[in-house]
Length: 318
Image 1 (tube, one colour):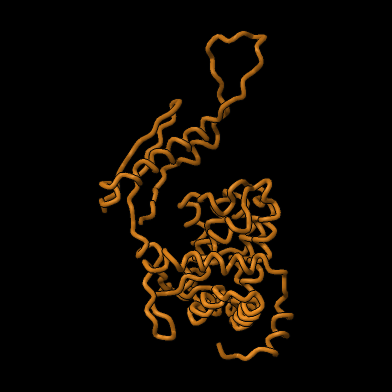
Image 2 (cartoon, one colour; image 1 turned 60 degrees about the vertical axis):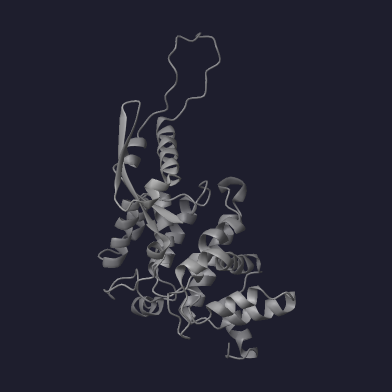
């Protein structure tokens, strides 16, 4: 299977200012007004339909070259290019060569440098989503514009300004949500760690509820402190998002499906010497990854201090 990479040229800027348009076919003045249709939304729909048709075309999938296309509507022309890249490339965790940034850098390194429990990029993105995007339909499911996400990534990496709230307030909320997902996806090691990956999969598969509960909480206590603090913050955030499910259409299962593989997918080599191929994950493992995150999302909230206190009753061996 493949993923679609789309390079958009001003699609959002072209669609955003468009006023709703209505039909002008000499309708009766006294007739009930028809609901205005949004040109921007329709244009987005045409682009997505075009991409879907291309994605299902075997010849397009096999091509390694960028393919150009144009869609025009109501005087607005959108030019875009796309190509298909296999999951073995798009899902590969690659450590950043510049350890001075935050993306692609170990979370322990970032928190130590920032003197914080949770990286700033995570806290800022979560705060902004909760401020103005928690009721956004499809939040975390709908992709943001790639150029906006890269702009935010560069800002956090260079850390040239502390005025991130101002920068974030000017960005589309889906780009901010996408930046958060990108951060977790580009971690050189999964947030729930390579070392514990197989144990998480074994734990979630236990048939006895009591044994599963004990094992999964033990594993949670075994995470490094920065990973645990970050994971607990993210869990609380995703629960708050799911509380607005009737508005944003994002259930706990939807969120677990989006974030599960990102938080658990290991690097190609684990510290135990096991080789985990990316192509193997997208079958049995991906369902287990979703179930692991769903378990914690559905579990009653626990604090960092409670987990550390309870960890005294567990063996440190996994």
